[in-house]
Length: 502
Image (cartoon, rainbow, N blue to C red; front, side):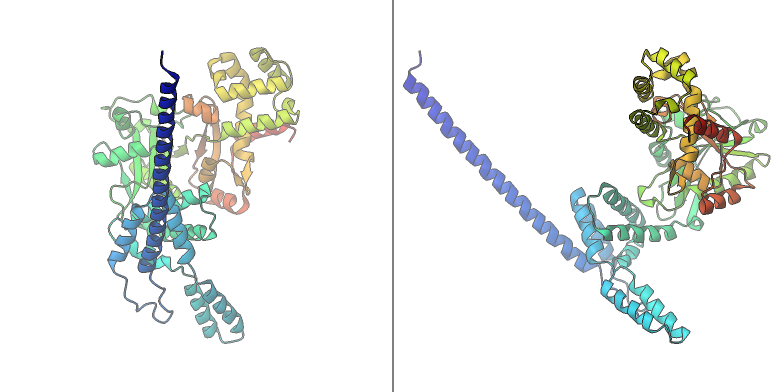
């Protein structure tokens, strides 16, 4: 048996050791904290120092065309410093850049007042003051951005920089209003540098450089490429893959369009990405009457809002017409991202408002109740919501048959009737409608992959390009917010309105 004294002695020594350990840890933590605070202060002062050095003052209006350009080392130093920062530091750095090196608001105000005072003067004087005012609205950092674009890798750096700015805005990490102005300035510059006249249309084949093929595979956002054999088929017979490239970003596809060459307008994606002709088969021109745009992916987040995809489709149409003069049918086969999420919200809202019976006919509700063993009313609505959420209904032929007319008319309304600021809520619909396409046909069980069922209940849509009508349709949509749709789509929309008492 251990004596009590020995036990007390051991306990005392343990307590003492614990106190020393705690003190040591606390001291080390304090040291680390102090070190971090010091590091943050040093980094912050470093940010201010480098910005003061590389963002040169805006030349005066009189010397704007005569000032020598800053040394290239300024751009390189800025790029190197920015790349060395972590995510949080980049947010702080961009905030400082946009806030402290933007527009001289005081100077702008003074010139605005002067412009008002000159309204009774001659036109030449007014135009000169307006030009001065326009020049004064240039942010100081714009010069730096322009000079960065001229060094090797500078354009790609600025594209990635804008991607970081957009992420800041979306995540609301920085609430600085100047950040949005920085994004707008970058977008304006990138729109000039990436104008369609400066882009090169490139057809991607199996003989294209391996690096390009790998990026095409990595960037595919609509229907993921499974393996190299899958990719080989997507650039092989009865398929075309095109990309826009830019001389300032060699080896980087900017936007990629995948096309299937078919006899008729495809009504399901399985026939395009899962069932292929043999790899070594030769194309039979007589079997090619339609071009199906089944995937378009923008590869650079920083080019968001810079119009590239619509120009790519137009260029590809001309390219295909040149290769196949007899080709007359051009259509997309598009996913409907967001439909399932919207539908879940609609079912929840109807259940809360006790309006569930408005969505389905009496016969359809009875079928749902029997198939799910649920009671009429909110219980049946909740059972339907769970079915759609899980995708389990796809495994039952009976349920699939019951839900087909329901989901088709709901989807038609989502695409045609749900709006944001008067334009289509669905981003893919908005893109094709802006291009002048017609919302032509909804296709049942068109994408039975888990992703297709989860996103859009397996439904896909064809946006058809009637080439002699696209300009008129585009103008109607952009100016008057009119959606051009086929009889099939309008008929489904009418059924939804009738059932939903709209």
